[in-house]
Image (cartoon, rainbow, N blue to C red; front, side, top):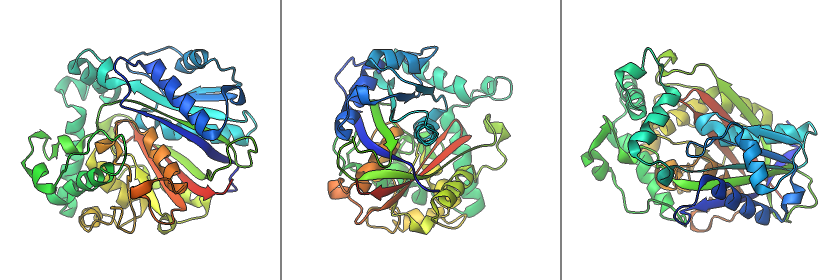
Length: 383
C-alpha cells in the first residue's frame, strides 16, 4: 500500500491535576498534539474520539467537538474497548485517503481512576461490557478470571511457566523506569510476582493493567502536509482490523486470537514482514496477551512465547523491543500511549529508552475479551 496519511503530531496527559474531568483531559491532550504538530484547531476538519465511562454521552464525538470549538466535516466515535485508539487512527487515515477530511484529531481520554465513586462501580461497569447476560454474568467471573483461564490454558498446552510469564511485567517495568511520567517505577522482579497475592490464579496485580486518569491525542494528516511542523512523520503504511466473536465463551481457542489476522494483513499492505519491525507496541491489558500476541503476530513460533520473554528478547537490549514505555502494566492505563510512544521512537526522541535506528514499528490493540483487533504499521519519514 502506498501511504497517503501520516501521524503529524502527538500529545499526552499523564497524572493530571486532581479533579480533572474527562472533557478537560480531551482538551489538554488535543492542545498538546496541535502544538506538537505546529497546527491550530482551525487546521483540523476531522475528529475521532473513543468513549467515556465517567462522562458517557449519547454522541461523545459531537460533545468533544463542541467543547474544543471545532467545526468538522468528518466525525466518528469508536466504542471498541481497548482497540478504540488504534481503530480511530485507522479510520482517520481512511478518511484522509478518501478525501473526507484534510487533518483529523484523534483523541482518547478518561478519568477512570478518580471519576468512579467506588471500585465496585468500576468493576460493574467493565463486567457489563463483556459478559454474556445468561451464560457468563450470573456466574460472576471477573475480567481477570477470564484472562487467567487463557494463561492456564497456555501453560497447560505449551509448558509456559509462571516465571516466564512474569518476565513480561518485569521487563515493561524496566522500560517504565526510563519513561518520564510513568505511574509505576518501583523495582519489580520475578520473585516479587511469585510471592504476590493472586488476583485470579496465576495472575497477580503486576499482570493487570493500571486504571488511570489520562489522555492522548494524535493528529493524522496527509503524508505531504506542508503546513505541519517540519519534523519526522510516522507514515501509516498498513492497517487492518479483525473480529470473530464477542462473548468469551464463543472464543474458538484460548491460546490464539485475532492478532495474527490483523497483523498479517497490515504487514501485507505495508509490504513488510514481522522481521522488518524494529519495535512493537502491543496492547497489554494483561501480561498473557502480550505473550500470545508475540506468537500470533509471528515474532516467535506458537508455544515459544514463554521462552521469547525469558530470554529478554522483548527488552530494549533484545532483538524485538516491546512496549518501550512500560505499557498499560506500568506506564498508564490508556492504549493511545502505545501509538504516541511508537511515534516518539520513530522520531528518535525517546532518550534513554531509544531503540537504535528505529524505522518501523508495529502497533496493535484489542478490545473486549480479545474479540476486536487492530494493527498499524508505522514507518519513519522525513518531513
